[in-house]
Length: 305
Image (cartoon, rainbow, N blue to C red; front, side, top):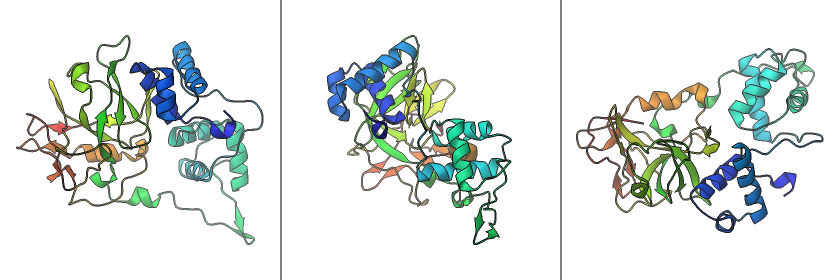
């Protein structure tokens, strides 16, 4: 597989999740439309070292994609970090792209950063460019539940993560070309059999996180108390990929929730079940258009996470 066709972290995490759900190399290859040799390599690396990321290659690093350059420029302008190494670390966290310090230094130079990385001396028509504002339009946007990408999902299979008491690895169908791998601490509250083919509500735009060597790409929504957890049930007739919406809070979801913006934390504080066990945000129900509302079995007036 050439450099231009390297797997994404999403694909690698999905391969490992499917493998842990007892799918064969051939089945995974057919499901994800990938060569069996590629699937085998990812699984072997994960078994040997618990990693799924591709190791860096020798030679001149590739230039970043335009969207990655925009993230790098924003990091350099807003954070005023003291070194290229610090900017590289912050950029990798913000974008999920693994690059060398050398690549970041070259990209910053091409953007017009000179000397200290916090100085932006790019010129336009011989005049010094005006520094761009530190806060983006999205940062200034009102924080409400519309910024969450909530979808109906179907748990394809469930497997307890080896050497753990409560972690499940769950490939979940959310209406995309391949399943999303979810690592969830539900083993204390549900059995593997109860999770098989279970319909769930999934938060899909949290930043992916590596958990015990498996990339978790979403979060299953539940009502929680100190001693009890119940999964949110989508309405009858809901299908994988159906959007969960809030009539009182229209808007477009973020492509990915950035941890520094604390959008999830601010919204989560107002997520609760009501007296009828219906999931709500500030009184507005979790709803699938023309199909009904999302609810839990018994937990009324409980927080949702």
